[in-house]
Amino acid sequence: MRPLTEQETQTLFAKLANYTGASLKNLIAPLDDSPNADRYVFRLVRDRVYYVRLSIANLASNVARENLLALGTCLGKFSKTGKFRLHITALPILAQHARYKVWVKSNGEMPFLYGGNIVKAHVGRWSEDCPEHQGVVVYSMNDTPLGFGVTARSTAEARRLDPTGIVCFRQADCGEYLRDEDTLFAG
Amino acid sequence: MAPTRTVKNKHAANGSGIKNSKAARGPQSDGIVKPKKPGTKPTPTSVKQLTKKKKKKVYTEKELGIPQLNMITPVGVEKPKGKKKGKVFVDDPASMSTILAIVQAEKEGQIESKMIKARQLEEIREARRIEAEKKEEERKNKLEETKEGLRKKRKRPRTGDDTDAIVKEASVTGSKAKKPKKRVAFAE
Image (cartoon, rainbow over all chains, first blue to last red; front, side, top):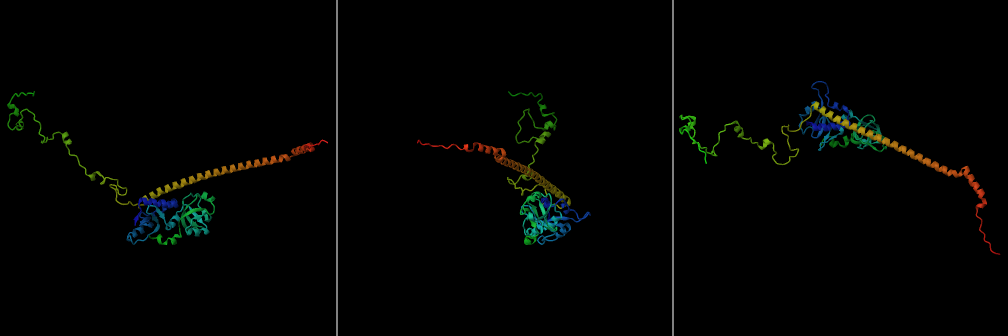
């Protein structure tokens, strides 16, 4: 377990900033105003990045490397080429600070949760002025975050699209908790 | 011819004549300058000579920083001098928030440029659509005009004057209109 290097931090933030707005800085802000206040930090265990309280991370340093399975919230993993891949476990953090959102109707929830892209017919609401290829967080109509994806068209273009046209490419969905159960938390 | 040297006082050649004096102790010279022997070292006298003869510092290969093998070292293998070995971690909130601010500004710029581009494209598309609509309208109008013109043309022969003229013509020409039948008469 170790903190991230400058390059790694930059890659991670660049990925997170795809989905989130200016409020992302609250992610690393101290929890209170006291001088030795606890704060959240990022820790790398093997190739996975965890978002964890500093106090817990310090405690975890007592655990031997091979015995430490996970700590805090797993945000994703670094690939061998140095890119960062967000996991579905990062959804609560992304949903808190999301910049662009898509709400899918109830008839589109299941197709999305089974790993499908979002078609126009299933979209209930859109964030206005969303550009093309921009990260969006997908919600159900009752504001439950379901996953996240990347827009295929800008909002203006999507209006002209036919109902079967894809408007959002899936990146991760809550169905992965079941589908990728074996690899999501270890290995 | 060798130049001759006159010696005024034969005994005066040995200095002042005082025993143990500096001049008396030195080697006796008979006035002829002999070439110096190659083995003998001249004693350094002036500052200039001193600096000239100073031994040059010999640098070892290590001091010069010359690579051990005369070849290009791969980027990963090369270790910068006087730098910390290993990774440099970023864990203090100040530097983290600096990186975050830089990344966010970059992303913001990207999104902004994307939006501007999309807006421009939308404008162009709109302009094109309007132009196409205009052209379509023009074409339709032209078609309508031609249709109307053709309709009028067709109607003209049926108009009052025209029909009258035809009738008149017909009535005037009437039976005359037909050419007189050729008759063949046989001689009786």
